[in-house]
Length: 325
Image 1 (cartoon, rainbow, N blue to C red):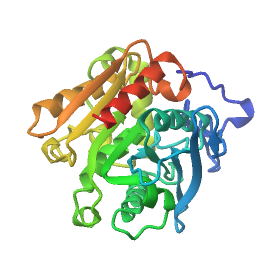
Image 2: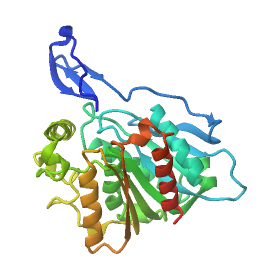
Image 3: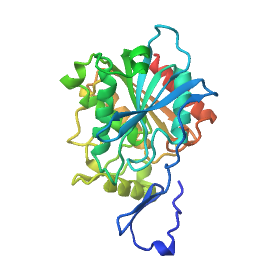
Image 4: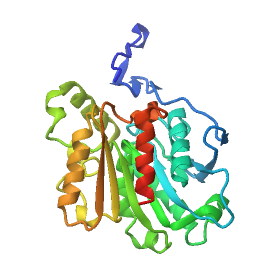
């Protein structure tokens, strides 16, 4: 992780310096330090995946990039993955080249339709905005299961009995929270079945340090700082939005799906939290099946920054296997 990001002498009025994501100045302006690059949708010649951008909620501007294989047999219905990109709730979007390329890889490997959600970011929109925007996006997708939606790709190409929530980092945490929300009557009435959840390097945290957090005080301090910035809560690192094992968090036994995949990376400061969550889920009264993938020699969300490396290719294959298990 690059923690240099030198501050220009002419930019001395910095009040929040949050590398590698964002810098906020006393006059209220801000500078995003990464994740701002974008690429266009369309037909990806390398993977044969087609994508397009769609506005889901005009009132807020919440949108998504939709993906499907360019060639689908007549009448064929594919699993749907509703995907939430990461970025510490501060940066990035489905249009970021790393996300775009990674989702193209997933679609061609797993033969799925993907709705990759662009929720609003902090600090302009502090939490829980990202969770609420993502919930609206999930309801938009579910409206097509009930016959109320109008997006042809979902109407014609999706099997709503095989729907997965997925995300990396902050997006994985969003997926986790929405899986509990999805048990309400409004969602179940749509007929959409959430059969599984994929948590890639989930952004789970907690007040008391564990594992590498005990010795790597620098990264521990950074993550503490990031969370305090995006979530104005008096619960701190034990807020249920970031700590699934906090006293006030929903019981694991109530998780609303039958299968969960958790992936962690050896060099990721969040690795121990992901492993602890997986172990806790397996020991809980939840009746589903949990799987863990532990990638050696890689850091946090490496598959986004190196989508075509061997470990990323193997990870995508692991996601595809989970979807079709």
